[in-house]
Length: 112
Image (cartoon, rainbow, N blue to C red; front, side):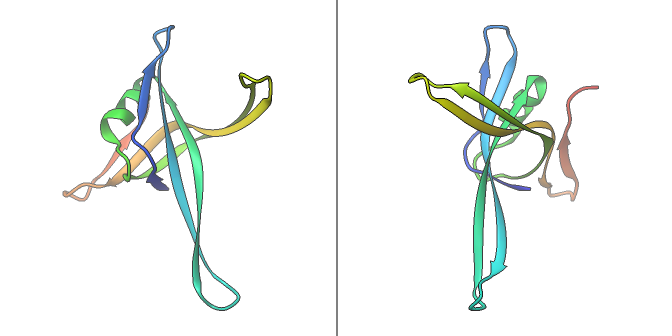
């Protein structure tokens, strides 16, 4: 669970597949040795595919609180300069937004 750090960017690939990307900030709160409250923010790359990508683009904006469910994927690639780069991302299988005015949470899952 965290807050989106940017609007969802949805692209259509040459294959016709849709992919959405954004960043999610999660916060950890703790007390220092001096007894002061402190916060650590961790940033996560988020990727969604297909119809789920389209729903994320329509329903989520920067600053939205969201619960993301998915799998953690680690990959490497070669950049333009020939350097090997490593990236970790969460590939979304479903997401849940905060409660609406009627008290129901809005859940979005891929079609079965």
